[in-house]
Length: 183
Image (cartoon, rainbow, N blue to C red; front, top):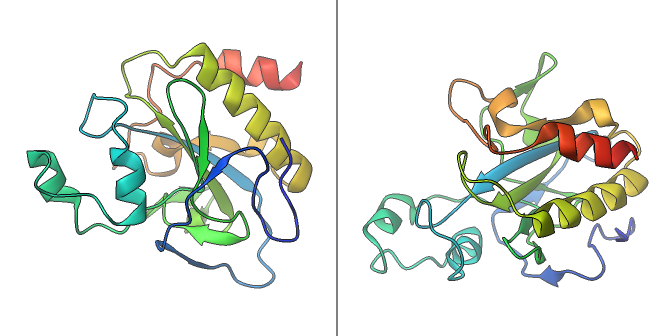
């Protein structure tokens, strides 16, 4: 997978530009990769609800849970669905709104210098082989475009916002992912 450094968009993925982003500071070095999970409604997959949420068009009447989140302005750079398809919502050169209040190695505001990847899933259900495959391909492309993202600068949402978040959770196989990335 190739990330075009001139505009921050990936090749070979679906593009759905989200309005929930803003500019990074001009000299900001992209140096962190944050892995998340999401399912809408919680514990359910498919249906296009995550995409609608990131685009600000989720219908609060389609499910009772959606009424709680419809006013939130959230995005990630990428979503990897259960079958491995990747959608990009925000250029890597822009600041997606995925991390919230966060801290990595003593530095706050992870959105400023990170790329956010959402895996369609939950903390407790295993991720699919297709998701790991797509995540590896995407991670390799991101590391090529942004060399400051070393294996030591890949983390989960649970580690940068431990009082608030638990994702990608115990169902994410860090050993499998990092070993495959190193291989």
